[in-house]
Image (cartoon, rainbow, N blue to C red; front, side, top):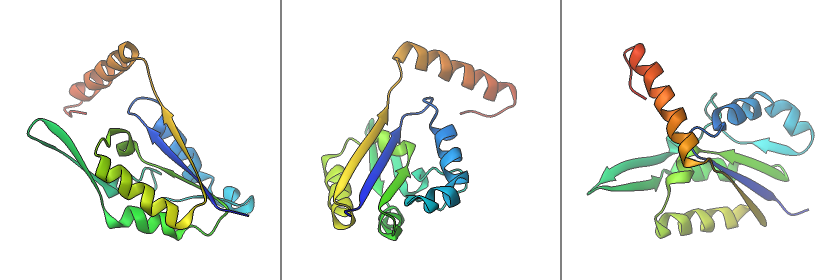
Length: 139
């Protein structure tokens, strides 16, 4: 059987954290059925292995080597990885790098991308920011 990877690119405020927590907490059950959720973070979010910064008004991203090490680590037929920072990658070079690394270990790739209507996203973000301000933090 050829290996297949599911790459979850959840945008902020689309339920990604709930999905990631659920998958992380179910890892042992998933393995019994030939699935592997790869993450070295108890939140299940691998975004910490994708650097994101702003430069000259543009959002920049760069994969850290640990992200690709995680991709290589799975021995299962079906693998899932999730990172919200994947949703902000716009550099063709970084996308090609991801494609190259994925093709080293997986015959099939499925990208899962959740979108949210912008008006609902704005309302949700404003509500989240209000909560954070009330406890003295910014989102």
